[in-house]
Image (cartoon, rainbow, N blue to C red):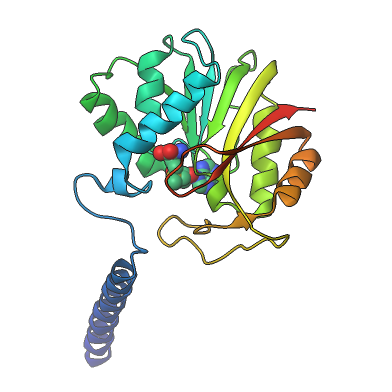
Amino acid sequence: MRAWAGAAAYHRVMTGRARFVELLRASVLRLRGRARPRGADWHRAGVGGRWDELGALQFQFMVDHGLLPHHHLLDVGCGSLRGGVRFIRYLEPGHYAGIDKEPDLLAAGRTIELARAGLTDAAPRLHATGEFDLDWLDPAVRFDFALAQSVLTHLRPGLVRLCIERVVARLAPDGVFYASFFEADDDRVRLGPSHGWRQDELQHPRYPLSVLRGLAEEAGAQLEYLGPWDHPHDSRMVALRRS
Ligand SMILES: C[S@@+](CC[C@H](N)C(=O)[O-])C[C@H]1O[C@@H](n2cnc3c(N)ncnc32)[C@H](O)[C@@H]1O
């Protein structure tokens, strides 16, 4: 009996301790700006904030590069639909698909942002995957355009290659995959620190253009450098086409 009471007390202390350690860890991360944001609009902060500005920037970029309502668009790393709500409103029903590795961001996009935009009937195809899996899509669907806005800007080289390989394989014959990245100012890859709350991501890796081009070639794609595109963090844009 005494041993049992002792074990129970020990368990209580250890559980309390674990909770305390977890709280401490979360507080430290939050103080360093690396914990999952909180509050009603956490999902907007969770993709970097600047909701209207970056939503409009990517939408206008795609329209300026030929996106029309009848086209099919794949939004790679669509997050909570910062660009997605604008694309969904613009495209014909069923012509938008989005993938992201964070199910909670997708859910917030679907339940909060589509409702705010008055698009609850839109039923976009959204899928959670961290490996750019596109096998869940109807095999007949080929995308006229794909976009990865501020996604390669968080990926290690292996995932950059996998992303390009899987996305270009699902493009229409003359389809284009636009992707933004941070360009290194010399010939060294700089991976930098990990992102924080979005697991398995880097904060701001920088790639020399030659390295990105090499990864694209390994992935079966040709890369065209478009350069600056007015992004507030000065990311650069590339166009990828099936080789
Ligand atoms: C800065 S946010 C940009 C989101 C969206 N493109 C936008 O402009 O609002 C980066 C997004 O990439 C997603 N992401 C990162 N690594 C990924 C991976 N391996 N597979 C799918 N999505 C990924 C993150 O979950 C996050 O939603």
